[in-house]
Image (cartoon, rainbow, N blue to C red):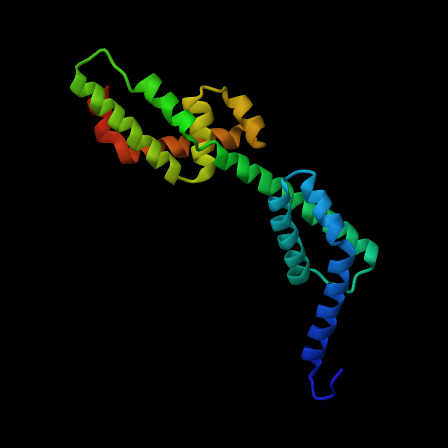
Length: 186
């Protein structure tokens, strides 16, 4: 190494070299683990995130077996998180919007009320999409699709008490926004 470099710069160069060795040695392992859970493109994203996490947060002077174990753990965790996030986002599609309109958007009252009801529920759907994802997921699964709370808790991998708390917060959020409109419809 160049003698004009200070201690910190030399350490950073050593870290960079060690990282390149680790990356070349374990790239296929990390990619294969991620591809066991995700599609190829998503696995490549997770691979990148895994190595970035390793570089920024961990000591690269660990033994190879320790590095390998870390990479396996980081990759598995990130892949599962990515998979859950993707599935959460896939809940937000037009199928459940249509279900809302079919179930709630028609009434036996006048055409004007029917129009207002559909418009109201479309607005609610749009606001559900904008709220915190964990609240929206609970409202969709339990409130709209009528899946029992204990099953929703299992799907989301959370305790039933956490589900009830989030459901209450989501309902209060909607009540704050739509208290006047809800009084007109009921």
